[in-house]
Length: 181
Image (cartoon, rainbow, N blue to C red; front, top):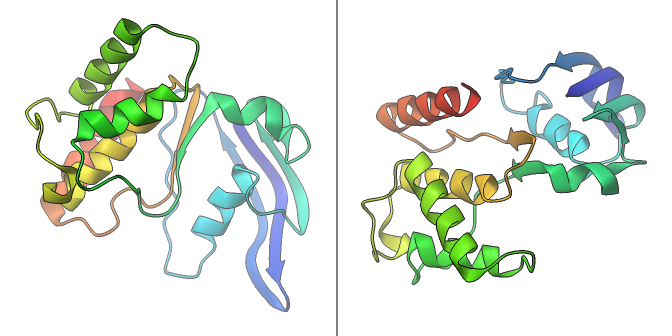
């Protein structure tokens, strides 16, 4: 699903990523560990075609990135940076706005997908509560629900536990494990 060979990214004289070889198969749950500034987010951005590598090769879902990114990225769900939502709207309403951009389904189909995504991430009890009243962990779950709406073949999350307390970290890790199985 994801493969890199000799992946390099330099910013001037600074090496953000140096000769990364990576292979992630379908069904794998894979995470980057390392200190701040070790190239984790840069690697994620390169995998998504948001940053061009200085050298090396990237293949996602069997296609070269960035050259064939246009055919691959619609099949990839990603969260890069902190998720952004309209704070005055509820989680389901935010997801409805995201879904409204799709023109390939009925209202009933969209409502069903939204309800399924909300349930999958454990937010079914939030009702009409505005997102601004959500905890950081709930916002992360909502962001994951937004990614799942598209039913992607591959999900890439950049620091999905950033800013969470230990309980929230545990919950997000459990959720990710559930999604893989």
